[in-house]
Image (cartoon, rainbow, N blue to C red; front, side, top):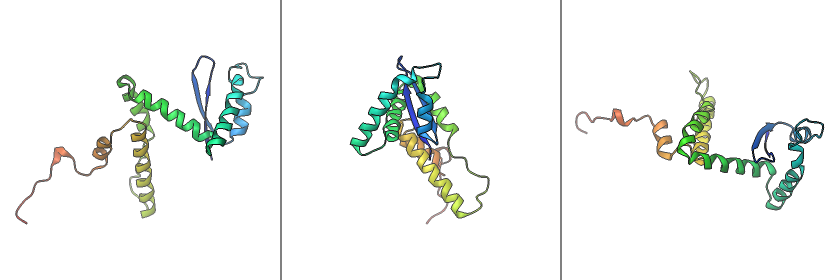
Amino acid sequence: MYSVYVIENPQGRLYIGHTDDLARRVEHQLSRSKKRKAVAEHAAVLAILDRIAEREGTTSTDLIRDAARKVVRKHARSKSSAESLRQVLEIDAPKPHLRARSPKELARFKKECREFDELAMDLGLNAPSEVQHRNSIHRIENAPVLIGRL
């Protein structure tokens, strides 16, 4: 399982990383032997974060994820950066296979799309109407026309 971590340097800049071995990665990031010792100054912050997570009945990874999402939401409200954030988000959008090999594969793709859409809306990068328009088989430009009588 991968973990996401955020480290803030003394200038207030955030470094976001991910790893499959958080303990090893944190130890490496906090190593005093590294030339950039700014990260090592935040060992106490990480320890405090673990304590807060313990008290709140969650994990430090969840706290970091929530904080990272708040940062993204803040920038998504800015018209100047929202479009570039959407472009970055779309790079990781689920891509359909040309042909689904099984119903399970198609169901998995649909689930990935729903989760992706939830994330995009949660981050404030897509409005529900945009998600509905993208996922709809009916386009307003091609409005259905009733032929004959029912």
